[in-house]
Length: 481
Image 1 (cartoon, helix red, strand yellow):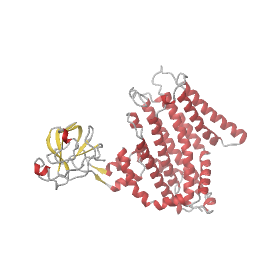
Image 2 (tube, one colour):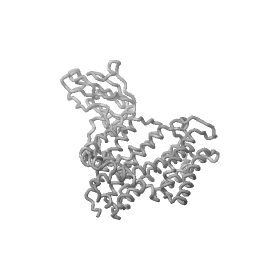
Image 3 (spheres, helix red, strand yellow):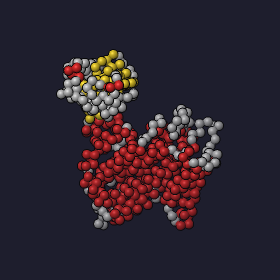
Image 4 (tube, one colour):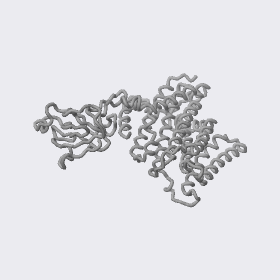
């Protein structure tokens, strides 16, 4: 997945270059003060929407039901940050946040953009010396700020549920600190919201939702310092770094969907914006199937079980004559012949290959005049095959053909991987939701490095840039009078 994300970033780069003028206009046309003023007003309008309050609290209630309803025994291994039924709780809980956030982005984006256009209130802004790109950027920043607070609140509900854990049996004791601290945070937010609405006329939904996030954060920090038996403990005991990385990736995905909603609402009404956001979300889940598999074309023939140097002098595999003994996990899918190229890589689609591209030499590759022909380009070829066992040799010019030496679990190929640039660019432009979904790696106890999270951040920034540029293009020529 790390290598695929790197490739997608390369694929989306040409699109960003083509949209560079729109991106420049978006960020540099308009004064910062004007953009911040629009963003501030948009943020206030967003958090005052009743749907904002409803979806946040609905997500919290659904997380409560998730704790009760995910006791389906996913295995009771104690390795990793989540185990047993909590694996399913994390999966369903993050999916709940994802769907609620996607719907919320569509609702509030249309409420503050397309509705203003339909009601002609946007004329009061564009009639002034304010550029339309500045309006789009200000609207996006305001909606993104509201979405950030909403998503953080939803994530905190999920983290509380993970700390509590699934009630697998009737004999399980509830985590009283989680119940008490969460209840206090919710009751305080509701109580203060009602009080301020009654006595000061403040908007109830705005006051409650803005208070709920810091109160839930304080409650979560409190349960990290208090054990299930009300004893003090180190924060590190229940703090889960990998889960936090998964939540961070999800927040980035929500910002991308916010940019999608902003672009759609520049031309469409609320219903169609929701349809577009749902369509992008669903297609993003299926992007690997429809586009990813067409971006890289190769067919693996076997999976490597072991690969060891034929002798100690062959270990580097950089000199002509260096040979590796390879054992496959099963019989090859195709009939292998002596002289065939030997490619391999970590993924079944052939990207990335662990070797450079090369052409197998003609002639008998078992003869010295072919093996040590320094005038011929270097290649890795099969020189012997018997069932699941084969020998692969470096022939021709000396040099580094194998970027990474073959290892257990690698896939074997007989040709280089072909790249479809059109599919690769489309795969990069259309948001790929799978890149933001790190739950599978956490459930399988595979640590996600910070470098991968950095790639996700770059991918999210590229996606936001693309869709904000599209929003500028769509809004630039729209009649608002």
